[in-house]
Length: 437
Image 1 (cartoon, helix red, strand yellow):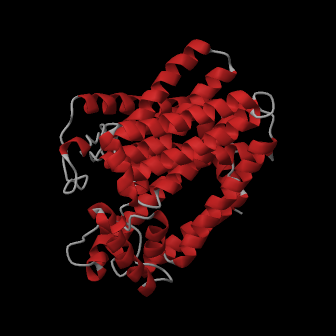
Image 2 (cartoon, rainbow, N blue to C red; image 1 turned 60 degrees about the horizontal axis):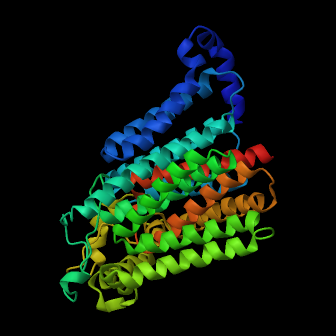
Image 3 (cartoon, rainbow, N blue to C red; image 1 turned 30 degrees about the vertical axis):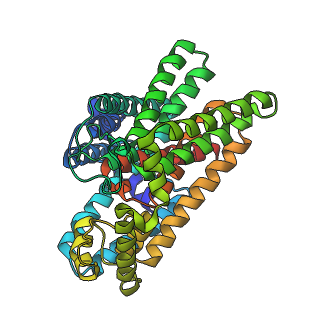
């Protein structure tokens, strides 16, 4: 029905397309705007990043309306995503703080519009998947270099980012925060978790093309960025990094296990030994990692437990449609449920956040979307003999899984710098799945 309407409009706007060089070359502008979103994410505010993303969506709508033959097709997992979006709309309509919830909804609409734009663009421009991954990799490398320099310069905390009440001076970690706005090491850690798989994919692509000089340069950037992730001191991103490494090892086994078993085991063992040595030899890193298991003894952990309890109480009383999307909406209503002295901007858990904001059915739809997309992607990774297709699908799958692991203990996932990478990774899966069909 929708595509029939598009076809009708295209038939009546064909003369505009024929006389407009801008519309005839609109793919180039869409491509540049997509890249601009990632580059701007490193230094610009959320509003400006969102404005560039809206430009991408506007260009895509123009392409759909004026270019003959353009249409939208939904994959199986995108049906789940559509269901999630419809439930969010219903949640918005039922929100007691409609104005605040509307602001959150418009952000969600911006993200989903960007996703549709990237997925539609990549459907007919699969050769641009690598440049997009490489651009994300360059942005990650830039932040990695900045983070490393901040560590050497011993930057001071802008806020209270770690519990130092029970630490000796040598156990206090210098937490780097890069240039992302707002300046926060947890945001930078989440950004690395989202983008590192794209950087690793860039290295793997150069290796597949036998461009060994590029492999060396990209490999150095990947190493610096991985170290910078550790220097953020973000414990959630440490869990995300473990997910990235685990996923990378599993995918590499597809190519190394059968013929290079000894080399594969040596690499895995070497990485495990290197990580263990780094934790044991660095007093501050060891203290930071061990604080993960301190439970209530660590003030940051205790704070999260209190927020989880209050947020779950919110969910129990608003389980059907939630309170409405948006962190401002959340904060207004959270004050009714919070424990004294434990104010929060979010639920510090992605699944709990979605359930609180939009209800149980929105959570089911979102999880259905994620699980279906990942399962379909993994099936192709296992069966495909196309090396580059496996590389890009693996990067997308690993990135999404790592973000969700990090999302178990934080909600920086909802920041635009991370959201736009997330939806790009989903778009890569969508484009390749449609190509397989």
